[in-house]
Length: 153
Image: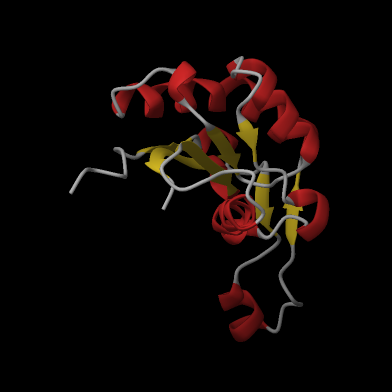
């Protein structure tokens, strides 16, 4: 009866498309006999980009939902690595009692699945509860990103 999913703020920074990339396409593998494609990442470049760009994306998502950062109960970012998560928490200056998804410690970087897996774990383990307001934000290859505020189920 009440909206539980805020507007999505999304985009990409194509100027840094090589920061996270695949060595070659699957078509090259099939058509030209190239080896198995692998992912490559320029870690320092990605960390700098996340630190300089993603906090503003998060703020825009919260504002689009008609809220302020003080209204957020849980922060569930893409589980890229603990250093990035800690940097985002610091830069967003979240309340001390905000629950932060840190599923990376046990499951690793599960790519696109990391946010729903971290959300499920927070709910299953009772760290977060139904009805709380969560900021979820993802980013990855091509330096694409998306953020959204949701009411936890």
